[in-house]
Amino acid sequence: MKVMASRADAATELTRLLRTPFLRALAEPARLDVLEVMLAHGGGDVASIAAHLPQDRSVVSRHLQALEDAGVVRSTWQGRHRRYELDGGGFVKGFEALAVKVRALANVCCPPAVEPQTTARRRK
Image 1 (cartoon, helix red, strand yellow):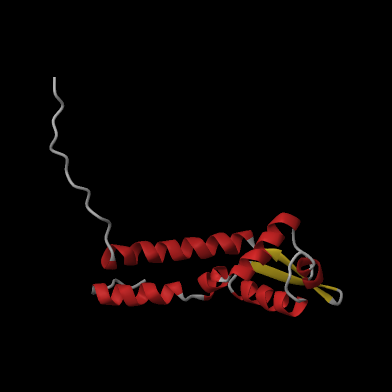
Image 2: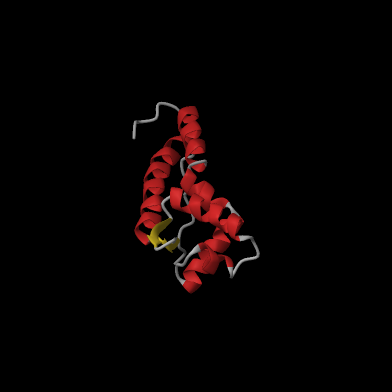
């Protein structure tokens, strides 16, 4: 990552990071519902995952595709069906990569607050 020259540059880059496919995939409540089902029941094909959700299979399929594109879910073909499962390594990697970038940018655009020094002395 290049060194940011100004607060404005860092703020622009941080805003761009907030719109990455990884965070956008996790920002959609319906996708979080899909992840919740997969955490509770494990992976499966679209029909088995959709059976736990109020959305149609086609909607769940689109959510699974977005999660796969973001690296949170992976799929494999089993016969004529596509099986989806959580990609723990991809999930962690996405958060770690984001954390490294945000940490560097935050120091430029929004440094931590300086806590006031206390001048109170202990009384004997």
